[in-house]
Structures are given as C-alpha cells and as structure tokens.
Image 1 (cartoon, rainbow, N blue to C red):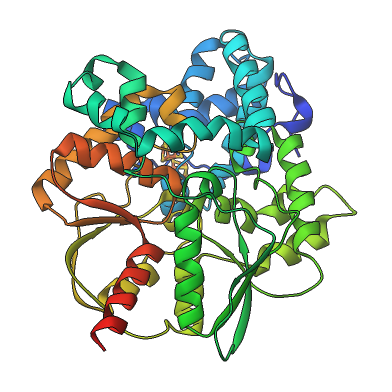
Image 2 (image 1 turned 90 degrees about the vertical axis):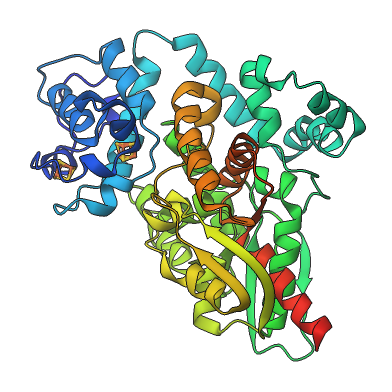
Length: 431
Ligand code: SF4
Ligand code: SF4
C-alpha cells in the first residue's frame, strides 16, 4: 500500500512496503553507475530511496531537485541485483517516475517525451516512417562524407547519435509469419520483435531464426504484437505500459510456446507483466502465465542446446546488458555460448556489467551522464582491443558503436545471436 504522503499521483505511488525494505546499509553504492561517476549520495540508490521515503512520510514534497536526482537514475537495476534486503528498486523507480508528471520543473520536456513515446515509439507505422531517414543515411555516401570532414565532434547530441547508428541498417523485420523451419523440428518457439529492435535490428531477428533452426527449433513471429511498453513504464507512464502489455498477451495467447525476446530491455519488462498487471483482476493471471513463457535467446539455447559447433577466430568482449544481467539474472549462458565457439577468445573487461549509458532513451535525455559512462567503456575497449563487442540489447549495441568509434579501434559490435550465426555458418562452410 502507498501512504497518503505528499505524492502528486497517489494512485501510482511507490508502496510503503517496498520503500521500507531499504535498511540504508549502502551495499548498493559501489554498483551504481551514477554514484561511481559523481561520488554523491544523492545520486545513489540509497539517496534516491531516502527522498521517496521523505515524500511517503509527508516530510517533503516532490521538489525539482528530487526530480532531477530521480531523472539521472539509469534504471539499470544494478543496485537491485546486489541488495541483500531484496529492495525492488526497479518497481520503486517506475512508480517514482509516475509522480514526475505532476512535479514542478521540466513539465514541457516530460510532456513532449510522453507524446513521443506514445505516438511514435508505440505506433509501428509512424515509427517506420521516423526511422526511414536513419536507415537511408546509415549506409549512404553522405555518411562517409560527413565522417571524412570530421564535423561530428562539433555536432553535440546529433554527433553522438550519428556514431550510435549501425554501419548499415538492414531491412526491418515485420512480424506476422514463419521465421524458421528446420527440416525436422524438435521444438517450437515464438519470436517477439519489439519496436526499435524490429526497425533497426531486423538482421538480429533473422540471425536468431537461423540459429534456432540449426538447434531444431521452428520459429514463428505472430502478428498483432506491439511495443513491449518498457520505455513507457520506465518513464512512469504505467497506464499506457499496461495497455501495451494487454495487447501483447492477447497476441501470444493460444499456446504455451516459449516467447524468445532478443532485446534484454523488452524481455525484462515482459517477464514482469505479472507484476505490472497485478492490480487488474481480469488480466493478472494471464499476465503471469505470459511472463513465465518469456525467454532471452541465450537462456533458451542453454535449455534446448545450441545447434552445432561454431568457428570464429576473434577476441570477443561480452558486455552484459543491464536488463539481462541485473533484471533477468542471465550472465553465464551467453558467455558459455561464446566459449563454445572454436577460435573465440572471450576477453573480460572490467565493469562489463556496469551500464553503458544507453538505458532506453537516457542517452537522449541525459546526454552528459550517458557520455561519461560511454567514455568509461571506450577506455576499456582501447585497453582490451577486442575484435568484436557483443551484447544483447539494441540500445547497448548503438551505444557501443559510439564507444568503439570513440576508442578509435576497429571492432565490430554485434548481438550474441549474430555472432553465433556467423560462427555456425563458417563451421558449416568449412565442413
Ligand atoms: S537499496 Fe538495498 S543495498 Fe542499497 S542501501 Fe537500501 S538495503 Fe542497502
Ligand atoms: S538503477 Fe542503476 S543508476 Fe539507478 S540507482 Fe540503481 S544502480 Fe544507480
């Protein structure tokens, strides 16, 4: 239950039970990226929870300063993963963000952000139109010219965004049919496409289809699926996130097949649909059943067995996506799959599980902190000199494109499924 407190939106306030789990031990501090960068208690998980408690106990209103400290949180959940008291920090922060629509300061920016999330990100046709210029530009001569004249450093946010774009954005992936059909299927699975993932990383889905087919899994991507709602929930727009969750549950109902999700951020949100819809008597049980079927592809392959050996001679730096390592607890399975590739040298960089600063739309709304976190990664890449940087989330892939450019090294950035696909195809060719 949430207390009356001084919450601007009491119906969506963090609960007193969730807040009271924090015993202020501070064990989370050294895992928090914003604390690591600033060294400030107010930019730590404990500090942010303290502010929420003050509001909950009616000892403070939601001031612009508190809103700023919450806004700077990446919602990476590194704190949640190490907290010995089991504080549900991700849930607390989503409900804290829900209060910000009623907070003083930054109202216009927040309203615009919500409009963009609802009317662009969550509307496939509008998103496809919005992404078309990026797709054209990514592989164009104009891009080469822009890079040659070295003006990106002078272009601020736009320059950083340009460096995040993949070298060449392939064809988008639009769900609504069969993706993979092995000659003899021993398993069946469904694929969730996602919003930006489907538009900019269609190749990852196609690679996943081939990898799963080699493992003997037939894969279908059902129509009717929508954006998972993670970005909306992280923005505190919980009502809209619930709407999207209901549509996705309906789109995937009718079987108990596993639902493979290539974006760690989407997967984490979908595994928590039960929690998101726990207050909805009509949907709570359906949401819990749906959530139990959601699988990261690395997690799924560890269960059904990767199909066939791979060969790839490369130094590979695996970087944990926060919503895979901290929110889903998946760290070892992707590493095991990489270790299984002949010729693959897995290089562990320090802080591989510290947020890269992508964090959904964080790099757009908090460019300075995002750039500081990206620079830490660039430094580690410069030191480790990987041939390939591997991760499992589209936002991280984009941030690592920029980090690799900043490091000045010649490394490719790939999704785990792309690496497996390339390695397995090479092994097939070599016989
Ligand atoms: S969130 Fe957890 S780890 Fe951090 S101070 Fe509170 S109880 Fe300790
Ligand atoms: S979610 Fe990440 S950035 Fe936010 S308080 Fe926790 S560790 Fe720090």
